[in-house]
Every structure is written in structure tokens, then in C-alpha cells.
Length: 128
Image 1 (cartoon, rainbow, N blue to C red):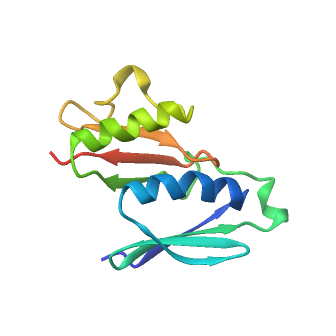
Image 2 (image 1 turned 90 degrees about the vertical axis):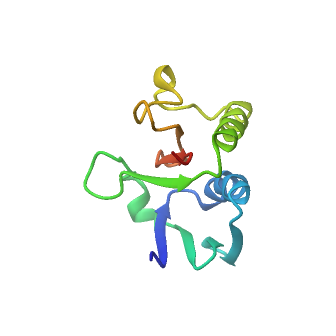
């Protein structure tokens, strides 16, 4: 079982604003908070976001480089995927692979794909 994931970010305030609403929708709860970071927990697994040191911020992030490609989360249902999709649109957060949504992952893979403020790809996938 995964214990936690820690991700360095370019702007902790934008990251908190983005992730707080999304993780709350998935029943994550705020776990830790300090001036350079914050974490949310669901059961025994938690996600940590930490402000990167200034010297590393300029390099940015790209999911095609070595390292994390994306984070995928379980949805409760297709209705939850649809509801999150509507909220993403309301928040002007672009849907990735819009032309194939909600089947961008394949004909039997019902999901929404989008990016966080650092362009880390996020996926919310409904049960099969």
C-alpha cells in the first residue's frame, strides 16, 4: 500500500488553491500544513505538496521527462467524473484530450484528464 507522495511545486499558494477543492471532492482531509507546504490524507495514504527552493523553480516540470507522468485517482462513479468535469470547466481548467473525453484512456476507460498549476497531469477514473 502506498504511504505518501511528496511533490515539489513552483507556487505553494496556487497549488493549495487547486488541490484543496479537488481532493476535498474525493474525501481527502487536510493532514498537515506549514508555511512551505501542505498535505491531504485519505485513509492511510497522503499527498504532500512542498514549495520548491527558488534555485529549482526555473527548471519547471514536464511530464514527458524522467519522473512522474501523472497522478490517477479513483472516482466513485461516472457521475462523479462528470461532476468534476463540470467544475473544471467552471474554473476554466482545460480538459486534456478534450476531443476524446471521457474515453481518452480507451473505450472502457471513463475518465477526465487535466493539469494542476505546474502542469502535472491529473486523472480521475470511474470504476469499470
